[in-house]
Image 1 (cartoon, rainbow, N blue to C red):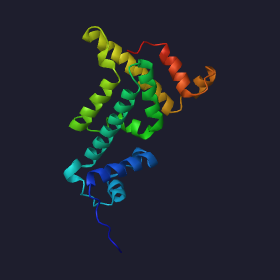
Image 2 (spheres, helix red, strand yellow):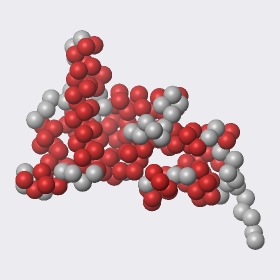
Image 3 (cartoon, rainbow, N blue to C red):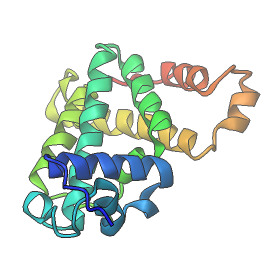
Image 4 (cartoon, rainbow, N blue to C red):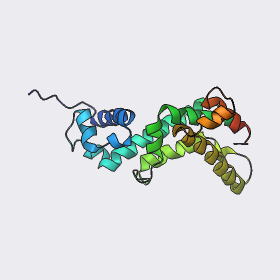
Amino acid sequence: MTRRSPPPDIRRAMLDAAHALLDEGGMSALGLRAITRRAGVSATSGDPYFGNHAGVLAALAAEGYDALAEALDRAGADARARGLAYLRFALARPAMFELMFRNDRLDRSNPALRAATERAFAALGMLAAEGSEHERALRATAAWGAVHGLATLAVDGRLERLREMADAPDLLTLVSEALGMWRLG
């Protein structure tokens, strides 16, 4: 049997493997052994980079939050456009979206995860709203709740009947029209 040599960047190889496994099999596919096997490294190779399995998941979720922040930034300043970017992200990467919000699987105290979460939250534009801190917090709660709730319902396939009732050609149209009914920023 020929042994292959480990990849030069073990951290990146493990994260790439985790991304692939997540996309292919969802969160249940994210076992540490499966990740290291897919990356072509030993089971303990990731210890210096991640510490443990929870560290791998936190780093993976941090990359998801960074990707979400980038998508939101590309959407521009319009609140509805940011909301639709949030929905597009959730629909394009449903397993990643699920992982990002699973407190039972993530160590929210992980510094990289905390920083990436804050970047995504800021990119959603919730903290830039005018008014007192109290008013901004209330708007942020309402806006994030609306956008995240709609994205979760869409990912779970729970909006199809409403899409039909609204005679919307697709989920993005339905959600765009629904978001237009709310002041999100």
